[in-house]
Amino acid sequence: MTVETEAPLHVFRFELSFKRVDSGKSGAVAMVGGAFAECTGLEATMEPKQIKVGGMNWGVVQRPGPVTFATVVLKRGMTSRRDLFKWFQQVGGGSYAYRLGAEIAVQNTLGETVITWGLDRCMPVKFKAADLNAKGTEVGIEELHLAHEGLRLLR
Image 1: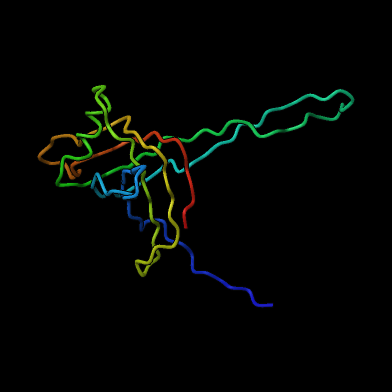
Image 2: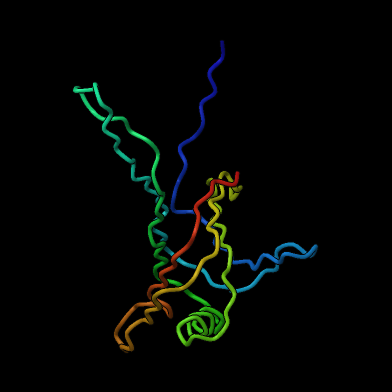
């Protein structure tokens, strides 16, 4: 029996892309652009339902309950375009704005994609620009928070 060993996955190498998924035959259309130094909140939590059953004095029966998803926080972003803020402004202003799918591709040290996380129907809920300070070292977008309706492991 052979056991395959893999090199540890370095989580500091990732690539983020946003796409609009059409219901037609055209498939995914690349949308908003930007690069970020940090991504947190890839998390899903299932709250189990506890059911008390007569005659079972030693405990309760656990059944699957609703799943909730954490807000994904993208920090220290850079972009030369205004797409991300326009998207936030449309959603926050009440006008129609696309919910976008996001893919976060984690890469190994050779730059090859090892796994890809998918976020379904993302919506920006917070946009924080960097402080305007001549002595500061921050980049253009400090934080972008995304609410989403599903977390999937694609590859």
